Image (cartoon, rainbow, N blue to C red; front, side, top):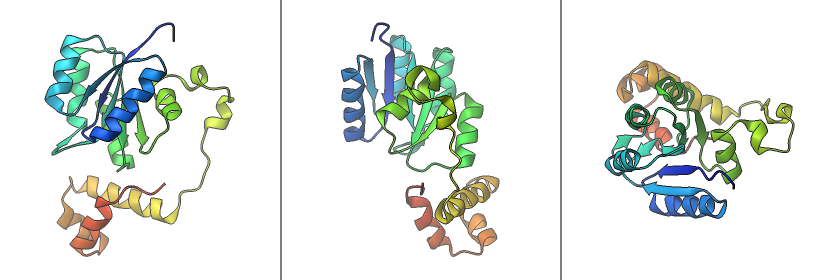
Amino acid sequence: MSDARTILIIDDDVHFNQVLCRSLERQGFSVLSSHTTEEALLLASQHTIDWVALDLRLEQESGLSLIKPLLGLQPQLRIVMLTGYASIPTAVEAVKLGAYNYLHKPATLQELLSAFDDVAEHSDLPAAEHTVNDVMSIDRMEWEHIQRVLSEQQGNISATARLLNMHRRTLQRKLQKYAPR
C-alpha cells in the first residue's frame, strides 16, 4: 500500500484484536491496538490516526461514548463501529455521534476496509451489486423490534419487557445473544 494508513483497533476481546491487527498489518497498514477507552484516548492523543475500528461493547462501557472524544482529538477520523449486537437504534446513534459506518461481527477484512472507504475504491464489483435487497429473517425482524422498543424506553429492560408482553428474563436472554443476520 503506497499511502499506508494508520488504523486504531479498539476491542476488549484480546484474540479478535490481535487477529484483526495482524491481518491489517499484512495488508500494509500501520496498526495500533487498544483494549480500553483510556488506552485508546492516549494513543489518539499521541499518534496521527486515519481510521478507527471501535467495538460497541468494551468491558463495562459503551464504545459509543468514545466517538466524540476521539473526534475531538482528531476530527478527520473515520470511525467504524463493530458489534455482535447490531441493531438499528445503535447504528443510528453511532452515526449521529459521528461514526462513519457500522458493521455487524463477524465481518471480513474486505468488509471492514470497504466500510472505511468508498465502496467503489475497494471493489471490483459494480456499485449496484453492493446494495442489499435481501428480506430480513423473522429472527432479525424480532431483534430489530426489540432494539427499537428498548431504545424508546431508554434501555429500561423492565419497561421494554412489559411493552413486549415478554418475561423480563426471556428478554434479557434474547439481548445477550448476537443479533441474527
